[in-house]
Image (cartoon, rainbow, N blue to C red):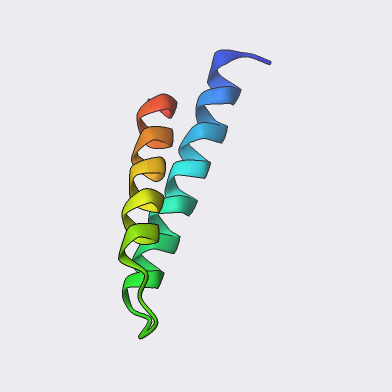
Length: 50
């Protein structure tokens, strides 16, 4: 696979992880540790994709 395809996949993963973190923040059964880890992983994937 080319670097461009891998970068696009990483960006997509990052957006999914950050989006699910935002959704979790709006739910009443909030798990703060999970949200922080999910956001960190999403930012990592976004960084890898750029």
